[in-house]
Image (cartoon, rainbow, N blue to C red; front, side, top):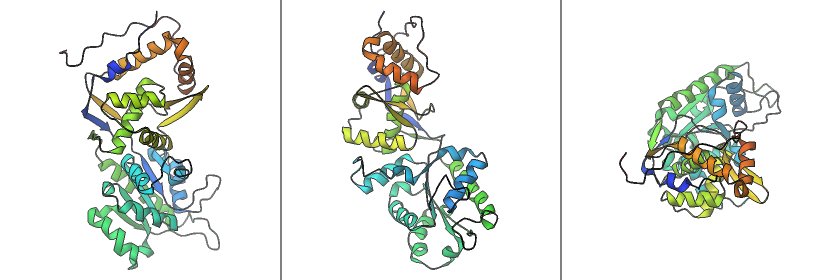
Length: 333
């Protein structure tokens, strides 16, 4: 017995305008000095902070994405405009942390500080000696950030071991790292845990893409494009590819190729959107799997991807149960 493809019918139950974006799992974008995981002793404050969060067993460690993850943003032609690129990162990130310890970090500060969407999303760490100087950095972008939110700029001491490039983890940096961690935790705790969906917010649209991939397990690009259209989000394919690129870099989505077909699947099972309306994600997921399993002649590649991507997902041996009837849109319960 074969089951029909009911995915579009389930999507028709969603009221996107009143849906909520779930922000309980923060996404942190960390900029600063060089990070080399192979080094036993870090050569930057950023590297020391990453190491500290991991060794302390802090939940923030798994929420961090490093700027290096995006080094191929222009080489693969996904993005052609730096301003569009940084704007998309701004919208999807919960917090952008910039440690001012390198020329690159100064450039990133200059880029992000101009974006109005980031007014409550930037946290800057600066060496106390540099903060005390009346430099362009202090009088310009840092003052601008502090005028918006005083706690967005934090000054701390740190040193390197004399005659080396290694950070002195036994000196003032030892306490500084703990205080940095507390600063980040405090800001994350104070942030809203949900927002009403806004179709003009690229981060919100990205999370909708993630959510339909998560619910339907594995999707082709053309399916994602079609399903977004059914939800009233008519986006150019190039823009969808851009947002999927960001989702992969933030470790929310992965891609697997089976034969000549590319499938996108969720790298985490944490919901990012609470869809309004009569939509029930568990029933939608079950109906999708029933369609895939009973149409093995056309869906075998997808099933192999799902089995490999979700290690605990095993197609049932018996015929799956018939899903509940789908109420018509607009019908009363």
